[in-house]
Image (cartoon, rainbow, N blue to C red; front, side, top):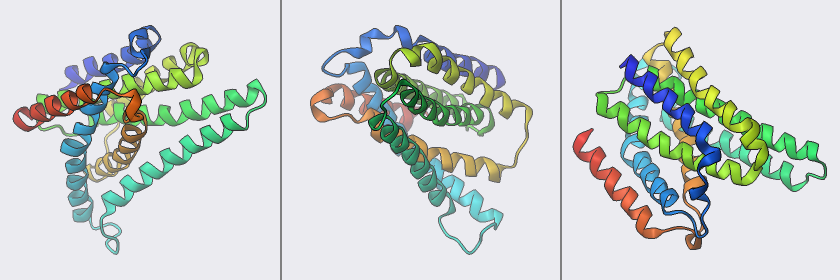
Length: 238
């Protein structure tokens, strides 16, 4: 699936680059597109990502490493969730106490650095994870694509012009770098399972934080359509 992953990774990069031009997402109340994207991402988490963590747990358990522990994959997912949450809180603290432009800038770079790593992992697993079919890779691509669009929208809302100037380019490059590292390196199924579990925690946090806004800002109908439509695709085509 090399060529398909190549198309997908550049589509991810293009989505980040185009964040500046997606003004239709800035509607008040919250755009129905963003609400539908939130539904798709939530569906992906519960119907694909959590079962994926369960499969990773079996691989890690069979490897016999850290045999004194149980639920290794879920502990890693929890660690991923905690680390990304800690970074997000650090950004909020920095912005709250900022009194100079320099401190505002440091909040931006902390945020972008955390998402650089996050994006690189997603790009890495695009080429490295063993998808069961073309549909499996396509579902991963589509769920992450709408997730990126929402993340971009929120980062632009928070950091404004500086994100347009630097952030979207950095996150575009991060995806390609992660994919390229996956292409030229060879690691065991055990290590891939560790990365999947860790990334799952980060995705779960960001889905909850970025894609489930306050009720008054969201469109329940669009959110429900995203969940139902994407769930049906996952259940019947994957």
